[in-house]
View (tube, rainbow, N blue to C red):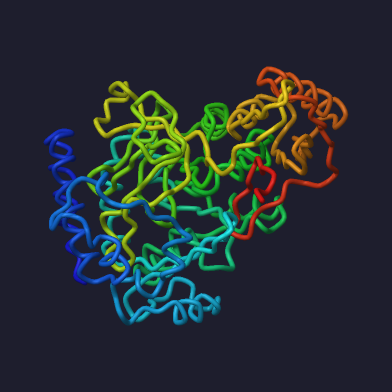
Length: 457
């Protein structure tokens, strides 16, 4: 598949100049094209869509899909008959092939399977090109000072993640380095699995102009910067992978004196949206459809929190994600964003599957979003990193990594008091708070899940 990135870039800029109406027209046209392509090439979609109209430009007409469904029909789902699950499994079993071209044309990425289903993702050239195409829209977020720091920093990009697997951040970086050797030398992956002092030393030597990675790990590095052990001057910080609270965003901006633009992305669609200075994610609606819905998949209006969100990736043809349940609870902004970006804006509350359920005082149950715990803990003095694990319906185990010089007992008393008050305000009954001697632990993919609910039966 030949991809004309210059034309796609021109289209992206022209659509923005044309306003939101032009963006939506482009979205509907691409949705119609993607549905037709999926019907023609994918046996799974051909059967799923057999009763739909001949032409579809309204996403609400499409049945909902999810990871379990699509992975369970892998060989019939993909549109390229050369691609099989067996081949992909064999490919990702070889760590030496990270970033290499699968069947000489595709990028393969995996997810860690914390939701219970391991993801095997095959991404075509158009899908990979869109990241760069849409990056041109983000150029306006940099001020003259930021551009100068980018130039003096040599445009070097540090990707702080978990190497050693075919995870998207690692595989995508490796592919870029293979395809663009000269530019690739300015991009380097830094392992979050190495001891923190070594990571700090490596970053100090590299001196990145752009720092990206999981939000939880970047806040740890912000602590190192504030303490004077890390001394880098990135112009741009791009946290991703986890919901960024306003407190964490401010901590990053202050510690690095840098522009912070969180990315809203997933392996299924790596370019969903980019954060703005107001703390909202602006959705690239010309290349993605994002639908906030309730538990019955009915539309949720702007200003109201959704149960989950359905996404349609309008770029990746080899593995179409159409009306795909991503699991995030989101809220669309009901009015124009003060930042001036015309693209629809949303905030992510967290994943609906990550809601914590506690017994209430009246015998019912109380649901709490993980974000309320993050907002609270990000304000707690002395806490550099935390992880709250629900080990029983009425028990939370708290893992803490403290800032240098913090008194462990004093910090724990503050954490205990704040969490007790928070639980009480939400009507939770007797909840036991356990102080763990373990440090926060990362998932295989490198994320630090800051709040881990009790496993659902």
